[in-house]
Length: 136
Picture (cartoon, rainbow, N blue to C red):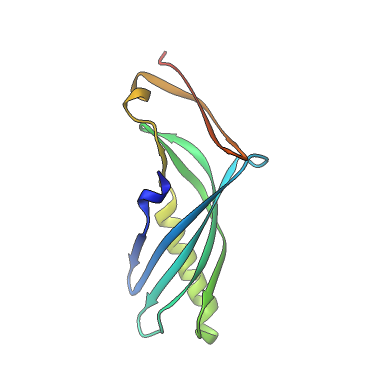
């Protein structure tokens, strides 16, 4: 489900960020998921560049979907020759990603879940366990 949302593009002012090739890792010990993606960006007159990003978050229940919440950008790596602008670009990219990834659909529960409610979500090292129960 997550891979269907990529490539993901985000524009904010003169900054344009594109994420592609997501890799999902499940961390059952922390009940979190990690997402690593390739990154391409442009900003105004600065040279365009590429790199990678590592993001983590928790899962929450939305309307018929499991959503990514409490998103944290753990690392942004930038290839190229940004020089003194590299740290500034990392901050801009991080902020843009926080805004665009919070609330992203990780898994659609579909119509089958409409007559049930999610009793719990657990991240295991192998994936996500979703417990559905009959609606009260």
